[in-house]
Amino acid sequence: MKPIRLCAIAAVASLGAMIAVPVVAQSTAPSATPSTTPMPQAKPAMPPGTSGTTTAPPMGSGSSSSTAKAKVIALNTAGKDELQTLPGIGEARSEAIVKNRPYRSKDELVSKKIVPQNVYDDIKGRIAAVGGSKTSASVTTAPKK
Image 1: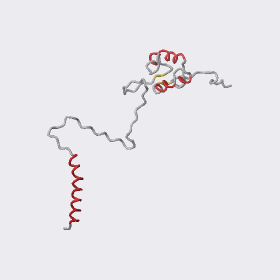
Image 2: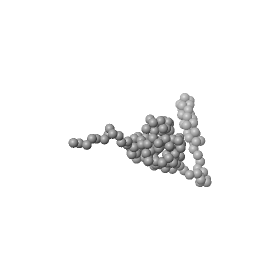
Image 3: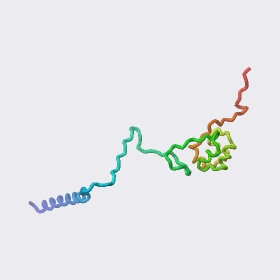
């Protein structure tokens, strides 16, 4: 054979060896003793039409880390002690909430300046203004003749 052809064959052979050697070096030999660490479990398949991402419910700064769903507190019927379980609501704010009843909507806490906006943002998912309609003379209708 010609020397140039031998050099080309040798170059190809050595290149193949360089590619194969790291693969062999990176493989691990099977262990003689079984491993005691648990293998990670595969995630269950997502139903069709879902993106695979989940969103956690918003957590307030003073909320607990439990995953139980917090019950909704009615602003117009809750007692002071129940209102004080909300983050950012202490004795003075709970008294102000009771004093300024009834509420037509929960955002009246901010508009009436009973709680600041940042406290309202923390508790708005845990409160509701149920049964807070005020009766006024302008709403009533006159009897028909």
